[in-house]
Image (cartoon, rainbow, N blue to C red; front, side):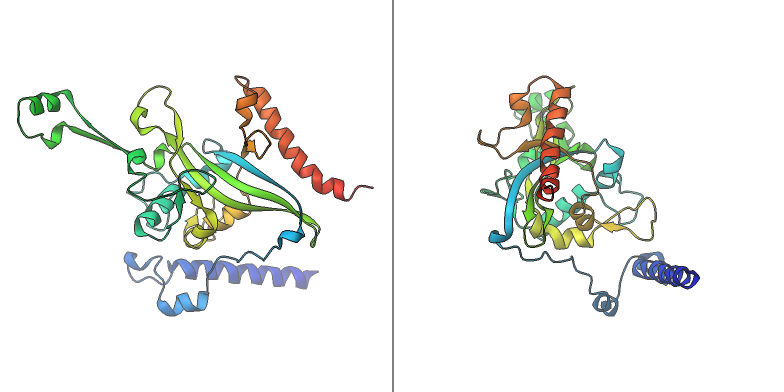
Length: 296
């Protein structure tokens, strides 16, 4: 027993040491080298997202598509929201929204869509109207009416930032794999949700989905980006691992149904408690399916 504990301790030390080496914080000669890996180091790491196994359609005994809302006000979901102020923090720490937007702008994430059915693709220019508001002040309008050139000081620009994201909508498939005899979940897409930029400073602005990302297409990017681990900062979790392992709290707001996949609030209106209970009922029904498979 003592030998087993000793081996586990040594293994833990090696893992921790490896984590520090990945950050390069102990080997850096100057601050600019922190978090920068050499080409040889990258080759040795062979750090790639864990590939999904092939699932044949004939192996899916039962499935249910669900849509969930991930509220960023909940403490368990803070790792998806923070940091929102990146002026005084390292470049290796970014919020999920910053990671998505940066890689969309770079072209690393090519497949973005206007809704959760992934039929119509959008470009960075297409989502620009939902991300930015450019307005002219009254003094600027007077300047234009006078035939003068509009001054920059009379133009107000408001951009959606990471601080404005209030929640994420995620779409995924629960399915029972009869070959392995277990209930599994596959995340298919996610969308950042923010106030309508045209009414963002009003008291109760409408919430809109900015865009939908096809999750399998973004896995490589999300694997390279790390979310802060509050329990052990030397071993951060990738956003890909965090989302795939469902280390967040989500509330089902829609399931696929005969009524055109209507949302819960469409048939239970103006009653938050009953909407919450209905969401729990859907969740329990999915969870009970696996238990019922082994009940005799």
